[in-house]
Amino acid sequence: MDELTPKERIFGMVEGKEVDRPGIGSFAMAFISKQVHGLSVRDCYTDWEKFLKYYLKVQKMYGFDSPPLVGHASMGAAEFGGEYKYPEEGSNLQSPAVKKHPVDSVDDVYDLEIPDPSEAGEIPEMLGAAEYVKENYPKGYDAVSVVVGSPFTWAGNIADVNNLMKWTVREPDAVHKLQEKVVDFLIEYLKVLLETGGEVVMPFDGGPTESNDLLSPDQFEEFVLPHWKDFRERALDLGVPGFLCHPCGNQTKNLKFYKELPGTLAVNFDFRTPLKDVVEELGDQAMIVGSIEPAKFLSKDDEWIYERSMEQLEIAADAPHGYMIGPGCELPVDTPPLNFHAMCQAVRDYAKED
Image 1 (cartoon, one colour):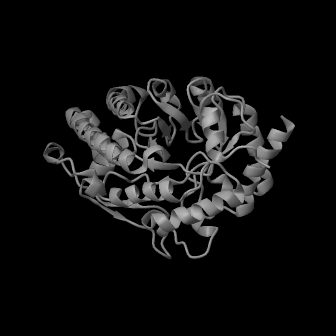
Image 2 (cartoon, rainbow, N blue to C red):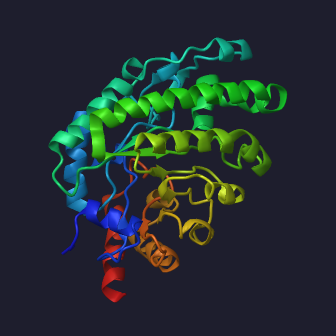
């Protein structure tokens, strides 16, 4: 029987306190739809009240700690005037994708207007989601991670990643200008979000576009770091308590730069960035989250997941600000329930042995 609520456990670890066991993270979005009746994959991104209602029930059933995540990796496009396409029954799409980018050219970057966040894209619905958690989640569970992304990943969603990559070479000023506009928008977005959700809100930033799959460390330092630091500093001045950060993709060569970002409460690197390296670089600064290979939840059995979980716990359970085991990116939609349960059980068994 757990001694602490999820919220007590998470913030206890973040503050460097001793807690009853390591955390259990789900990084679950559409996976929730496969655990219940009457919730579609699309609903997990378009009907936040229904998603949040079922999320809490599934969280209590498995006994994991991570709060619900509202938003997705393609955000930024529709908020600045583009369009998304959503998962439909029978399609292979399992999360929203960009259907139309609002920026096609360098001229568009300079002409782009900063929208009102209270009316932009999906944000009105996300504000409603934060309010729902604040008003309906019980004490100890009353938290919600809300996607704010990173300036560079949002810039790629707005202008198309292919354009953004070319512009880092041919039109670097446009890359900086677009991120400046994104940061200004995100700060206004956070103001409205904090007014609506208050203390239950945990901003979720990071993304895949700044990974070493696309950028060199030198490019990260030149294009990504200045605007991200600017965003974090301004956000902290607003009273944001800190950030849950998800650097997606292979970011091993960027690790040293993440130490420079102020306000990281927890960090969940992709599995391609070795967990041992993450603990060594950032363990004295933030709670470590992750990072089992998501595909293994589909391709391996529960015994493999259990053993892999134990290996991860041996690496990170004693990190100074705590460790929350979980997948290195979103939990696959069709993960067998027994595989996810095996990860949860490993944590409880490890705590008994420790």
